[in-house]
Image (cartoon, rainbow, N blue to C red; front, side):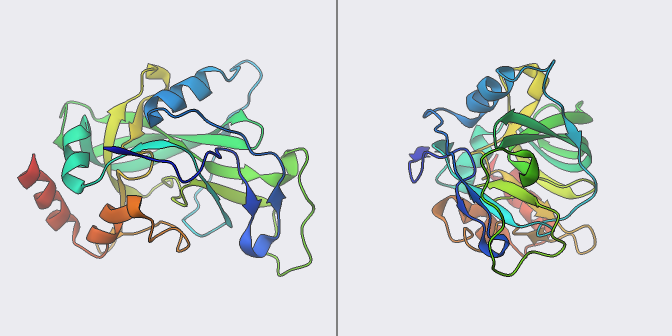
Length: 245
């Protein structure tokens, strides 16, 4: 296990490719495990004044990606991810809500159906999974630059996806193989191992693993498992997991 120190920015920062937007105010996050950071960030959000927004059906690539960065506790091998996970399961996302946690920062809480459990409590049939990032309407955020003169993303709705380390959050009605640890605050359910490492999308038709990491970030060291298993059959991946437990 090691920590990634490539950036200290948890808010959206920099330019957004074709869209031409830019964030003006980055914010730092402390060096901590992702499950603790999610819990602290979301517990500090005033539930009485913060609105959550249900997300409609979208897929990866629907909106421009803002890659965000931070210090995270990362794993260095697939075996380490398998070992560290409290639950390893195939899940289907049933519903989601986008939760503002600060200006320009959101998390996404997904309600999922557990299809198959490879590790952990097999009696669990549903759970909630909270991730950094999600859909963000730039028009609602103060201190934003206006759109540039470059080519605009179509449709130009002003909505982007905040993706931690370039990895989009899970999407409604999609299948995933997830590697999870319980959040210290039960309200937030479970978190992905390594923030983004322990999440593999399964194609609903071919049942093969899909790498959903944005191409600008796909070669980053932390995404070794996404590269290793992309294109592999789901059953082959699950057999690999079982053989290592």
